[in-house]
Image: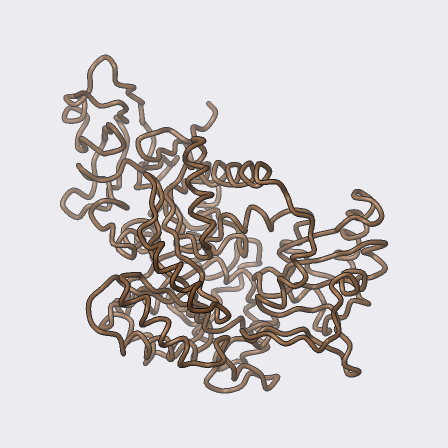
Length: 534
């Protein structure tokens, strides 16, 4: 049978060591059927094939975001975006404008608020009550690990300051024991977030579909979904049935410390849930929180004396749960940001019987070289998000650096050090924590700073990634991490037909220019899901 679609006359970076470059590729039924020079590929075509002239284009495998929260991102990224808002005055002005828009008594919601916006002051609802006006207000922090509420929302939730949670979450209280409106970590956060109006399922599905299309437009053809529940599979199936699942999704079920045995058994039974473009692959644990609020698990306390507690208060329960899912054939991944969290997770993985799927650690924001060197011989994947460097400043005046202190900041978010040590490094965004546009990731991975900050040099002393290492992190490495090596993340005969056409080679384009690199065509499973307007 002839190919359904072909691109000819392009420069193709295949990520296949046996044929690193080509000029043409053809696909049929979601699979690559020919790749090579134009003449070779035209032999696979006939008059029914859509042949696209790729002159001036560079094709790469489609990009996989190795850590994302697609569904929650589409739901939480509503209302006011405080992304890159740097002062309390700006926050207040935006809240007042949103109150005027939605009206008295309605929810004001926002997201992506940086801790630095409070100017180093501890949060108290008094800071925003007047601006938030008459009605409840909830703002999500940039990292999704904190919610800031106004006084109205505190009353609505019935908070007393005496709430207890099993997962290390807590409500911050003032000196008199009254809640300030700051809820740190998941259970405490959702006590407040559950107050919001519930959208209809159709609304949610439309939000998810919009988010997928927006990501297709910047070259994303797949994600590793990191917060799945037993309901997530049904949502993905609904999206696929409606023709709206324009990407591949590798689903990881979230495992909370509060889950009882029945819930764990239900997750274990759902291991083989799958559709054409999605499948359940693994489970995800959270060993700690974040450095900025003192909930990361550190070997030594941070500058505020915090950072000495894990999110799993009973460490043995974490170890036994990891063993349970390992034995059941799941890939296990764990959020571990602090140096002790990373070490403890590696120790747990090291205690497991050999065999099974490849396990991984998410974030690894601070760890000594001796810990980083353990990844390669243990076969543990390092899932990294270079774009998170956007919140760090060279002068160490940002909240993350202030918490850690100078010595521990020098090897912040060491993607390049892990790669140099031979670890399999997968790259992603953690959206909606950070923007999903992989071009921002290419910039940050190679220059180790945010594109909207002055060029005062790289953040810390960790090694930057090269352009080719960065592309590998979004393609072949991402495929290998989920057991799809040879079938995904590469353009070769028999591989999945997921590819993207750029206006130039993202590997050789200077990082300062990669932000403007046009994404011209995105193909998922052999179907065009994005085509730039002429």
